[in-house]
Image (cartoon, rainbow, N blue to C red; front, side, top):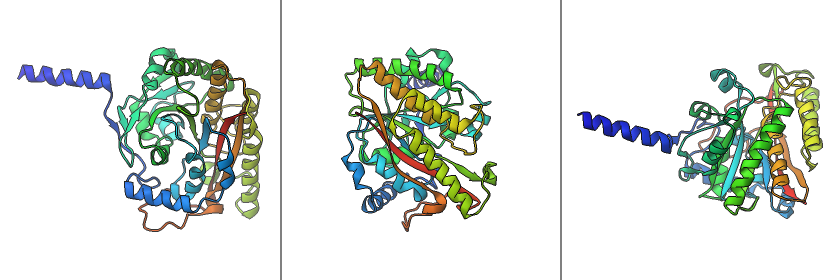
Length: 353
């Protein structure tokens, strides 16, 4: 009996060292985790694709994707993911408010997980060896490891079905971004990019072709539910709110992307304090600037002399677009849409010029 206990304990220790099994899915309403569901959705989105000009862009190295329900934002996802073919994808995700509260509201941290795999609709998703490389090389003050956080957070898992549809063998490095001011973002993203640059060099990877940087973010959350009604709750309010959001995206996330431009973005989203919002409740207010700063610093450290250029592919919102007419797909919506409750989102791609 004692020998059996020791064997079991030994197996548990080894399992802990090697990983923590498979991360289960969290949202099985807004996202799809069945092969038939995924194929049905992707086939519909391919047939409804309306932005052929994105096919003429140079190869992308990074992108911003929504994480809202597929029935709302599916087309906006699709225009980005059809350009992602890299075997490794680093995903910068949101740390939503309920997750922050459950963890005691950690700030100035990145959050890693220790799962061996993540669940996917086509097969289990492998974790890139970059994740453990980062944990080994980064200053321990910069991150925490929490499977609890990653299990409770949906913004990263939303990327999986689309990534897997275009590349069954994709490997991911999931990173949740917590609240931090711009100066902390600059220093932390700089350190993170240094470690990633070393990993890329050691493994002879090419940015864009072999490794891609994906940022998960929705834009404005409008309505009393979000304590955010600066323009009221009618058609005019909706027009003013979406015009402001689209102007922010076009101004700060298109064209040449520089640290100064990203700082301007944070000013638009935060106002005077990184802990607040400025008339627009973007849940990507940390993941977007941190992810883009990481890419900018990585290019600097990888001796890339070309500029990082961004293009917003498509902008929409739940009230304007409504639910896509895809029937019997086994998908649903997790929140209503109306003039009193809507969410905006967009996709964007980044390339070198």
